[in-house]
Image (cartoon, rainbow, N blue to C red):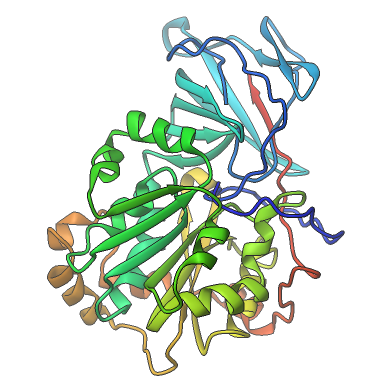
Length: 402
């Protein structure tokens, strides 16, 4: 959502892994036609995704009813298969491709809302296992059941490790959840959130009720633009905390450039105030997936910052463990103990420990105690990500409602 529309990536390894969190970049879809009616709750409708690459629609072999639509200049279909659940009720299923040889499927109780922007298809569904789910171009971005786990891990460790975070910059984050968590901190005077897609921001403000008040908070400065361009235009040393809530680096998307040594050194470091902290979502970090981008992102950050702390937590709706990397600008900054984390939560977050669903001192000790396999990958990683030598994860997903 909020990244640069830059030149196409160079040829490189297209690794296999799940392209998931998309909080930042998108290239505009030239001439993208609108699809179906604009009414909420009408079924298949308008919209696009945070992976930076659109999902591709596949026709399921067992089709009872299908809805024709135009997609990238070709006739495609979203296919429905009527399955029987309890009491013989009809059921819909949404299938996502995690990697070339791995897919998973979950039930859809209802298609709630949909819209289309110049960048992506935006859909809100009521799913069986995860409650309300936000989809961008058919890829799950966040789920009601566990989005606070993801967003609390993304935001609060960095905010709590800083002695007095007053100004925060969010790259991407148009859903509003990242800003929601940052604004819980009593010390925060201003949060600048830059997302490229106004339709997503408006959609989430209207339909994600937990975030409605976030968009109305006077401390939030929402800018609809390219996050990289906006951050470059800010004064040096302006922000105490910078949060990268960006799309994964997928082949063909522009977001990969915001995971490079050039971006970290020439932009992030310059815009952080003394003692500043940068944190970024870092893709899949499971025992099988951590080498794709998580370990290289960590290695790249360590080439720029004096101290980098990796941490990992399982996110059920992402079907994997997810990773974050927190980078300190000041080499003297240390990692908080369990007790220090709990004390700062009580003192510095509005509502104290009761305001957080997942994170506390003991949980922080757990997520930052990375397992042996992932520790080994991080310690042995040699790939420093650059514009000319990036890394990518699987991003050409298949969305099928069956």
